[in-house]
Length: 163
Image 1 (cartoon, rainbow, N blue to C red):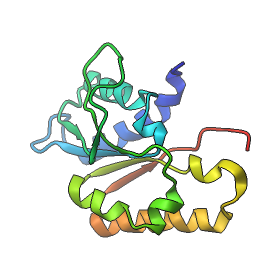
Image 2: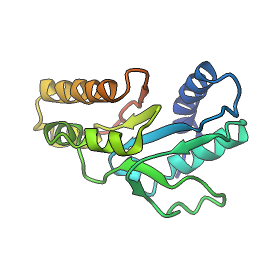
Image 3: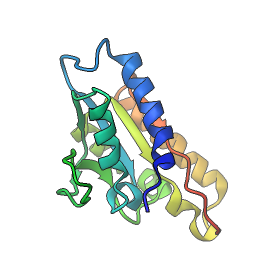
Image 4: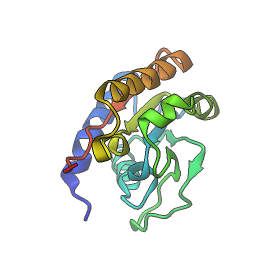
C-alpha cells in the first residue's frame, strides 16, 4: 500500500528546489529530473507516478523525468505520468560506483536534479562494510558534481528494515 507520508518529504524537498531554481512554475526550458535508484525506483512502488502527478497539480508542468530506462506506464495509478527514470532492480550503490555506471547515465540524461533513492540493496545481509557504502555514495555524488556542478541532489532516506 502506498503511504502518502512516504512521498511528502521528497515532494517538499523537490518543490523547494524547483521554487528556488525557477522564477515561475513554467520556465523556458524543462527542468530535467532523474529518479535514480534500485527496484524501489524502477519497480511497482509507483512513487514516481505520484510525485509526477503532485508536481503537475502544484503547477510545475514544465518538468521532464529523464533516464535511460522507461517503465512504459507500468504503474496503473489512474493518471498519466512521465515514464523515464534511472532505476535498476537489484543494483547497489557500491556496485554502480565500483563499475562506474553512473557517468554514462548522466551524460545521456543530462539532469538538472537527481532524486537518489539508492542504498537499500547495500544494506541487505550486512556483508558490505560501512566505509565501502559511504565511499560509494561519496563517489556517486562526485560523479554527479563532475557532470554538472550546479545539479541539485536530493537523497532519500533508506526505508527502515530489519537486516
